[in-house]
Image (cartoon, rainbow, N blue to C red; front, top):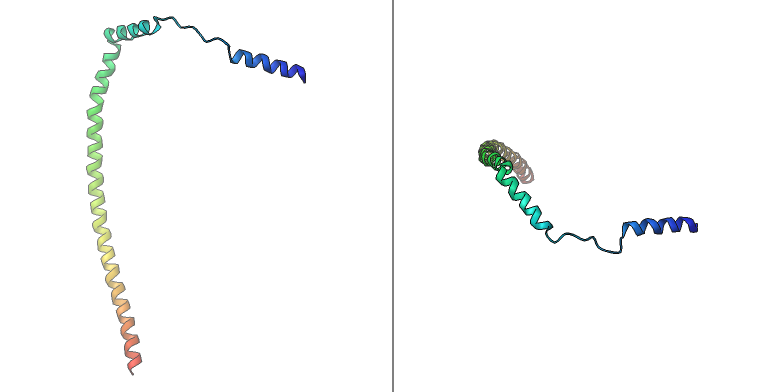
Amino acid sequence: MENSENEIKKTLKYLKPDEQLKVDPYFYTRLKAKIDERRKEGGLAEEKWAFGFFKPAFLFLVIILNIISAFYFMNSNAKENKAKSLYYSELKTEYSNDYNKIIYSNTK
């Protein structure tokens, strides 16, 4: 039991070092210089061209899909409105007939 506790303590000691890692003070400057160098070489310029081309194409596609869905929605609502009005008129006729039967049967 004591042996396993010692092993656990050793493992935790490796996971939590007491002193902080030291970083070269010019690390950020060197990293920024490498990024700028890659931009000048054209690696990132090609990506900008691709995004520059695909963004308008994607926007155009979204607009077309919106227009198509709007027409579909408006047409489906027109059909549903016709069905609803037909249903309501039939319901009104049916209830008015039932109401009339009740009224006239009570008066006899």
